[in-house]
Length: 332
Image 1 (cartoon, rainbow, N blue to C red):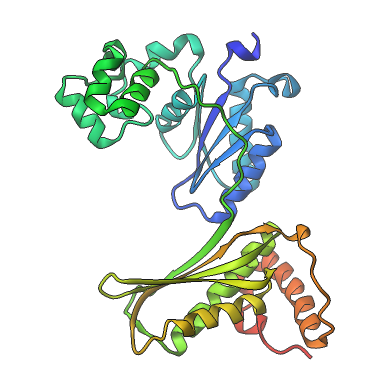
Image 2: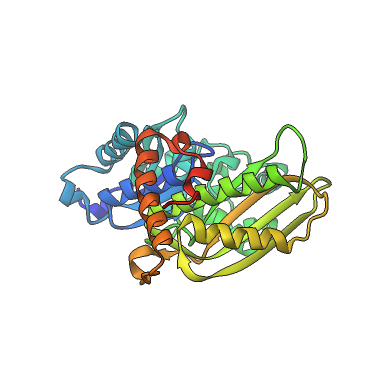
């Protein structure tokens, strides 16, 4: 059977609340199978298998199982994979996988029969409000939706949404899988769960911890940030946010700390009751694409050397093996 006659679109769902770094590693694993991987943050992805089936000498079902086994074995992350002839069918299938992981393939000639009995809300792209409108009209399953004239569905759901729903109920979705990496940002967050914190030493210590975690995350990805965004959430629901650009793109603890503390000072807090802090690296680029100047400062060069050593220690023994104070301490 040729690639064209097979289901070659894979929709991958990661576990809920998967860490950013684990998600990125899942994407890297998918890229080992196919060069066409489309990231759908925060925890999903699309993979196009057309053109690689012959290379792997495996069918779509076996390739899906291979992806899942590799993810569990290498990353400890189980995945739910739906495989279909279009994005809509594959995404609908992945949502029907029960349990923490599994692979569900819907062959092209089985698409109509498989979609037909599903509740209308199960169709990819149909939200709760749209599902209720269709049910009020007497449309309870995808098969029935597929029999309704598209013009009628458009009157119920609106022009574009109705047209898409009518097409997807028939297994039609012309969108291609487009190779796309993660958005060019990375973030870390801390919520004060026990009580609200006043601006002071505990808040500064928390901000320092976020700086170190963000810097380590960027270095593990081989990226540097050109800007930082600090977001403060206060008791009562109000928020404050500011973005500041770095003089030079960096993923070093010291550079990010200086900018993060300046951003915090700009907030001008006076006994404000903080609920949470978030720090986001913006405008990320590959580290090897940025020239790094030699500082001619022995203390800075020693700190950068120690930073690399501590990265390796954390990679082996866990992030908390070294605290943030040690990371930014003086190095002789």
